Image (cartoon, rainbow, N blue to C red):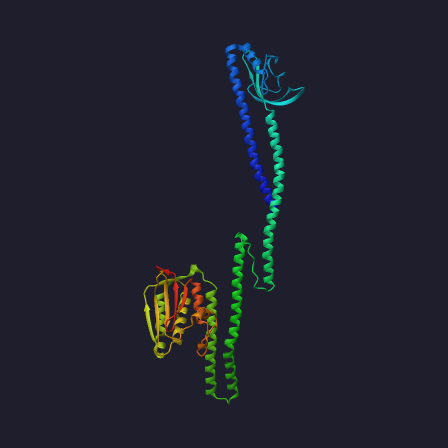
Length: 445
């Protein structure tokens, strides 16, 4: 990471400085050639007006005390006639731009300078060279190239240093995550990844990890609770089953006794199967649904079918079962799970409503436009502080211990609600309990 950061910084600095160097060099070169072109135009006018003699005089005047502009006029044999250059540079062709080295006095010293010039051949075979001293430009370019090297070295150093600091910062935080994960793997499920407070990517990752760990810890706690509850709630029926079989074997052989014992045993077995079937349904609901395979469910028809199924049981128990069902209420979901949730709620309501009581089943659309079904009874109800607890598996209130059941009915309803992204609301019915499940409504089937 540090090396990559340094390389990226060097490339960026090199590109920027290279563009600056190139633009500067091109600009200075264009300015020099424009200056030379202006000189050439002026000298051409003098040559047209005064001929070679007048041109020689002008070049002599311009050469006096000139520091940067360079001139040389020669005859056909390249013998100097006028100008501030002593000799003609080699390897030049008429019309070409040429670069060459020339000597010039600086105080008591003779130094070499670089020049940029253009060569022309005048009528009569005369040669004219007009140029410009570019030694200052050469020095500028050399200094810029030297600066580029030093800037590259500095960028490499700063890139490596900055990359190492950044890498150490990130690795320190990643090591903290790894340390927490190792402690959790060693069995300390209460450990959580610390946040730096910067709300950066690692903080968001840490929050997601902590939320995942909270969920895993809750699931493990739920699994332990379910295991304990299964062991507690199934031990009694299994003991009764074994005791009944043991007593039957100890008695004198009798076909009627054996038959009665087998019927009771089948009843106990059916109760156990109901418990395990409920657990399987809850597991299926909590495992998730393939939303692409869900279908439009007519909540009105499914609820009406369940009400018709339970009407004989309600009449037998002396309970008034009333239906308030709006037709053509559609939701998207799994029809089997939704029907099972309706069955569980209605079965619970009839189980805990005393004779002479009422159970109301409603289907409609609430104030926010969601489709709902609701089961309200006139039974003993559930204390408000227990509304959340009764949705857990195998939870049965003290007043319900004497009735038949496994404590899984509302757990399945809760799982179905979560699976369908529905709102499950428990509220008092004064007296009794009202349970409503509200789904996102499907406006067209």
